[in-house]
Image (cartoon, rainbow, N blue to C red; front, side, top):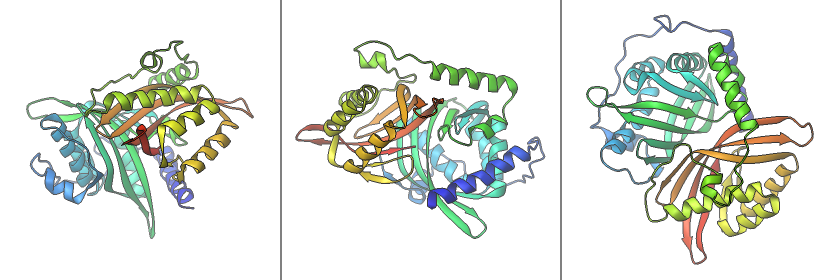
Length: 353
């Protein structure tokens, strides 16, 4: 029921976007508003928006990124006009944000957010995770979505690349990915130019026709488009476990079940696309049911961010419906918690969107 209500709210938002395209050049009803903009209030904002599962944040660029994320939450919760004013600091005119799979320019992104926030009050809450590795970060956080007297809580995952522009510009967003490709994708495409939609089609065709390299080297077989260094003593082991998981999945359900028994702890829990938390036995049953309906292939990674005992991954896949033959392609984001046991490194928790 909770998921259904969330979907209904989103349908309202994107129906509005599709039917009311507005000009953001001075016609979005914004007024002068005070915003938060300081690198000196990180600890204060971190108390207001705590990270439930904190990871290492290094001084310099990473600390600036942490501040930008916390400041972004603070300004967003003040309303669209504050968020737009903050956007002149956080983004450049060349910044890109991928919303539910669609690659939007800053103006297109503002259009989508203005339309959405006219219909629904979206308040950002606690972070479950904030994993920062150099210029890259992955965040997983809670939202409270209000329409009238109704309120629905939800969760969002994002990956963002930052850059230190120096001088007055400081640390700003180069490109971000807010959520993965879903049922709102077609509505988001309506915000794009014809040339931008053509590029989207080319990207989808690339994934639909992608051929996984025939090699035993799993790093070559499942490349990472935006590699990062990672932190901690477990980086090599975590990466190896993730790659083996990809390969096991692509080798069929029996290979995957064997890997699950080896790669996950016995008491591990997995939260799926339906937001349902499952034990390992429940998770295995769900995956066995899924592969009877769809032939899914995991292709390559946009990112693998590893910070001590946590990892966040963003990857691409394609799928064939075994009943209709329909083929689709998209992306997934996933957070993984690792633990060291007497039997080696194991996954203790998984969250996917």
